[in-house]
Length: 420
Ligand code: PMP
Image (cartoon, rainbow, N blue to C red):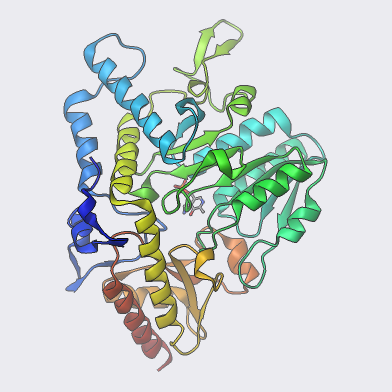
């Protein structure tokens, strides 16, 4: 169900061709063509994903696992085949290492709860960073509070990188968990996760958890070589449906961890006073799952692979380069995140001194340009750079250079309106 190879010419994406798969982009907002630059919050869905979900409901739907009838068999097959497909997306060795969740947030809550029960005690240390999305911070705060553990923070350099020297010094015998983002949604920083993996392994017995919400949609992820134990990601940021995500986990740890929620499907046997658990990953999947969501997420993986992930990444890089060079010319505008293109994803957060980020976004919206303004669920990041909010443009495979130019023009207009 992937795109034909003609979506890529040489290493360049044929964006016009790709946009035919995303009818939502072909509309006007207040008479202006929509320019959708908010994919870091949620990406749009191609027809191929929408069709896969539709076909599933039209033809194959029933509850999974329990039934012996034809539709139950088909639904179970679709659900488990989708697991195998999403396992391949992150190069997991085995589909059973993929636990379906509602998204990155639930995946991270699952790890924090279950690994916390199994491994984190009073006085133990959990290392996070000042770069976290709240989804990779609040679950660890809750765990620290519950178990009497201590949260420690890796700080950020002025360029928006993790201070790895500080991480090195922090790691030790008490470190039980290190939880960091692969890619920052608020700065665009691509963290050197392999290097981090080596550091953590070399200096502690800690479990390394990566928040892959912004990594999996945009970079080729190989969980077998990253050196992490858990990798969490969401379907809706990679052209799949909302309410669907996945956690990849080290099999041994998944076996060791207690369940996250109780209910149907996750048990082996139920007695009056206790129960035994189903095999991994079903032990973590209580209740009727989001079967259509799994089908949609697998279709999204097919679609993006069909286009060519490496070419998508190159395309995002070229849009980011263009955006940074055009925006840097706007007087009083500051861009956050690393200067080197190799170290950043297609996320460009900025402020114009003397204006509010929300006002800038509102004026862009009036021109049909969809961006996001605020702390982007990463309050520690805006605190670190002493701003209350940033305006953030983010790019994906369907964005064009012309749209980036419209963004820059729109930002100039916003600046003129707000500052005269
Ligand atoms: N982490 C990061 C870096 C994110 O960008 C997001 C989504 N904005 C999340 C976690 C949470 O993902 P979800 O809302 O899909 O659970």
